[in-house]
Image (cartoon, rainbow, N blue to C red; front, side, top):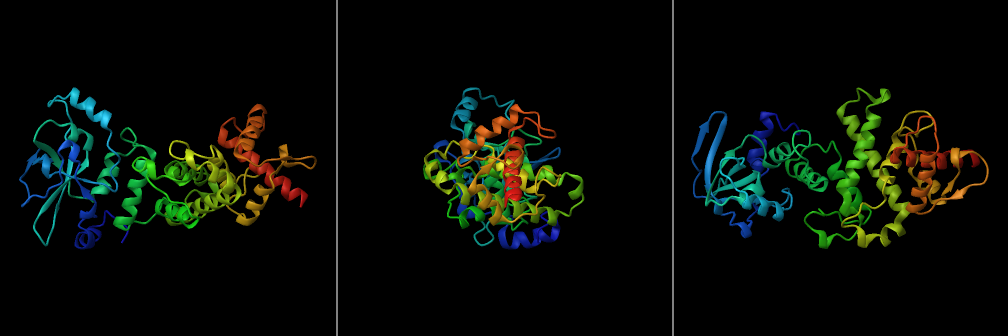
Length: 362
């Protein structure tokens, strides 16, 4: 069952996962007295207008360590310094009842920084038990309606939603993690595990966002408008897997040398967008429209033979990311029909011309 708004799903989900609540990941934030201790019984809730409110001792509140983003201690300090009961928004709670023990675990869905900054021993919040906690957390931090989470925190929250709630991986979040793992990488949430990040997959959230947006451009074009969601998801999965594979095979040595800088830097700059656009663009003389051979693309990029326009003649060898970046600047300096000065478009054209040169000369 994948439709998480279907009542039948919740009947199944509550029996097996109690709306995706996982006691193993329900933890305390001891520094701020949020101790994660269970209550002996369900707290009293009061209906006020459209809200269900409950006042809970801070020692009984906890968070889910798997999907909640890392705490922002500077932000908490600023909230503490300027605390005013009358203007502070209420946090949102989920109340999990253990059917075996009867214990109740109040969990903060939204507002963990505000809760930590709250000076009171008892904290009032909105009780929201109608959807899984991770889903409500995603909704509460939707970039379309609220200032966006860090892209990595958003990615890993989506990963938890897909894995824990058995949702269909339409955005290829879990799939991308597996794709990196299959190539020997160790993806981790860089916002929480900086000291443990050892390779470029620490930036997986940014890579996913870049590829997803590039694919969305193609899905919005006439040939693919109206595709079923399952077909769109299949297209994303294939392209993202291929992009990761191609980049790994072509730049393996350079990627290994970059390992120490993966915590703060997105390795590869524009290649994640440019290559994705080239592989997906269905317009004539812009890309291959999803019809390509991965091994051939790897071979072409490894050879690195490039010439502006892909015409016959003397070529230049392109090997490193810096080589690509320097050549992309040449496209910016020229007025090429249909090619904007946008970085990703210049990288796309660069790879297109490499491919064109190979096709003409082989």
